[in-house]
Image (cartoon, rainbow, N blue to C red; front, top):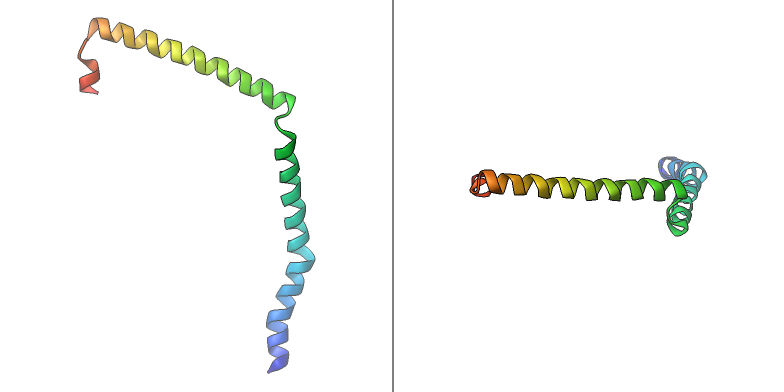
Length: 79
């Protein structure tokens, strides 16, 4: 009976410690390193482009809202 407990509890534990735990630690510390490094140059460029696009979209929305306000003053109440 004790051998069965060792087999059912010990083997999965050993497999976990040999394969899963080292991989888990490697991936954990790799992600920690990336977070501490901050954004790469390519990510900064992408972020800047997104900020510029957001500003353009905000301007367009304001323009569309002003057009709707002048042509249909009650449009906000219907939405």
